[in-house]
Amino acid sequence: MVCREWRYWAAGLALLSTLPLAACDGSPDQEPPTSSGPQPISVEVNQSRDQYGKQAILIQLTNTTDTPVTVSGARLKSALFEKDIIWEPTGGALELPPRQPKSLPANLPAPYCGQSPTEPLMAVVQYSEPAKGPTETSVEARDPFNVLPRNADELCLAADAAAVAAIVLDPDLEVAPAGRTAVVRLVITPASTPGESPQKLTINSIDGTTLLAESPADPWPRDIAISSGAAPKEVPLTIRPARCDPHAVAEDKVGTLLPLRISVGGREGVLKVAASNELRGRIYDFVTAACGGAVH
Image (spheres, rainbow, N blue to C red):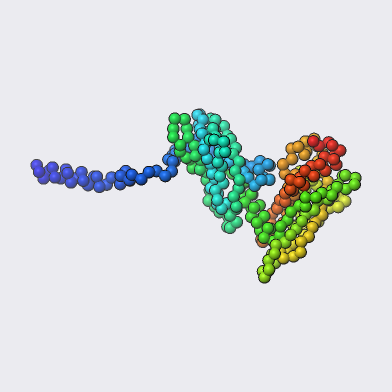
């Protein structure tokens, strides 16, 4: 009998030794629990014309459940950028109604301009459901319009261009006496690179915008070569209204972003040069007057 009881006691010790030790760890949790199974929120990337001019995007969240959820934070983890793309509420948490999307603006961080990554785009959303504590979900996000690759490419192109020269639009606008055309000046200030080999940049061509076009009598120049360490120069561009339909100015978002098609450092693409607030106002006044007051 004693031997049998000893065997039962020894078997019990053996069973206890196989149980996980994590249950005895008294350290507090550092992160909210992560939900498993079907996710209550789906994530998609988009961008309005207004955001495009501000180097920002929209993180679109959709509540896939039949009850409201409250979102307290969201971030995208993309290998195209050096840091996460983050949305944080400024006026308290956001309520997502059932089966409805909401778009949240988020600024883009500096791009990662190395080798093209292959990792999926992931989103982490902090939220809570009715009568439940805060938690978070990690889901693969969709970017159906390639918003992030396009923006990353343009930001990397802009960084390469800035290493060669600063390219801006002069705030002054010279309106012709007849008022039908005007001249805006592209100011190019090459970077100073003493003791280094000059870097090259070529403005292959200049595109029109939704608001501005070149004058047929004075077309815009092409194949403008720029080298770091060279003297500054200005390139005059004669402009005319691209459209005179009603609300052209009132609804404008990107009409004063001048697209330069450039080649620099092995990259080719479009560099957008934004008009300053002062120049933007002068362009709007010019277009309105040149169209005979037809735009408003």
